[in-house]
Structure formats: C-alpha cells, structure tokens
Amino acid sequence: MKLKSLLKKSGYLSISFKRLKTNHIQIKAEINSVKGVFIIDTGASNSCIDLKLCDFYNISYEKSSEKASSATDQISNTMISKKNQIKIGKWFKKNMTIVLFDMTFINKTLNEHGIECVSGIIGSDLLKKGKAIIDYSENKLFLKS
Image (cartoon, rainbow, N blue to C red; front, side, top):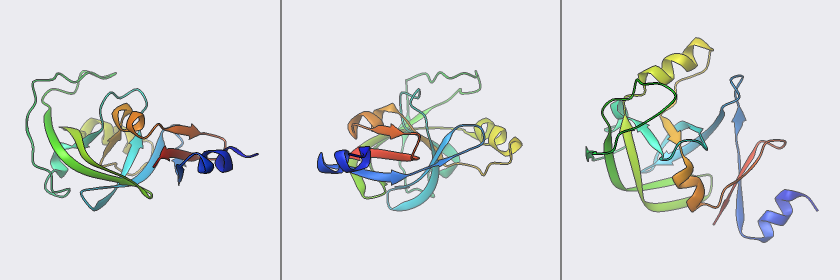
C-alpha cells in the first residue's frame, strides 16, 4: 500500500510542494485568506512572516520579548501576532500565532539563487499541530485534518 493511501485512511490531507535547487521546500499557503509562497523549515521553532507584509496579510501585532535565533545574526526585532488563520491545501487552523521579522536577508539569499521571494516560513509549531509527515520522494506534505 502506498504511503498516500495509508495516510488518507488515517485522516491526513496531501499537499504538493516544490523542491527548490537550494533543497528548500516551497509551498503555497493562505494566511488570513491571503495567498502567498512559503518555505517549510522543520528547524524553525515558529512560523514567521516578513514584517513588511503584515498589512498585506491583515496581521495585527505587538512587540515580542522573544529573541529570534537563526543560522545568521541578522534577526534583531521580532513582533508577534495571535489569532491568525492558516490554510495549506485543504488543511485549516484558526488561532495560530505568527512571529514577524524583517526577512530581507532571507529573500536576498533566495534571489541570489534565482528563486522568487517568499512571504514567510512554515515552522515546526504548525507542522507539529498538523502532525506533519513529509514525503520527499513524492514531494508531498501530509497534515492531519
């Protein structure tokens, strides 16, 4: 039995993703009913959006006391937004918290590789809520409905 069939019987939804030449996983998602392009990062603690896009995604936010860490030291100020809706394929969650920060350096790096800018990152917080399974051989993300 194929993985997709087994997971479907267990209540999982299948979402196709694109593998970039940088080996990042790119996926389309909706934040507060607005479509965008995101990278899945299993090493990111939180799902994030570029601070410059908060109006575009209808996000209200407040200053965060959390310090963001990454492979770079270029993240300084972070904001936090609560009660957001996230939809990936047919998978949908309400009341999601999103961290906002300036993602200029991330998009600059992607552009240097000829890859389009992303709105944000789908992190392990969301992947955990969806009991995510990533099938690299089929380019599928499975989230439990």
